[in-house]
Length: 93
Image (cartoon, rainbow, N blue to C red):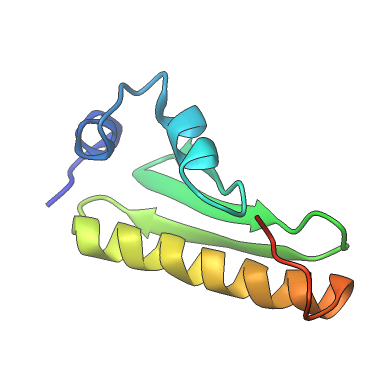
């Protein structure tokens, strides 16, 4: 279980200060993460369109599987929206 932002950052392999960059750089869609009271919000803009994915809020405590599943959902949805806006032959990354 992840009980706070420091534990989340540690599970991701970074520090609290490096968490936003690690999530952005570690996802094809450039997902964002923002600390909120008692949790985090995650989402993504979809470049090349007016679409956004999320935000989704995860409230502490949560399991890392929930976090990774949420990020994967964001990635999958962003890819679908990217293809809708830019054509099936183009890839998000």
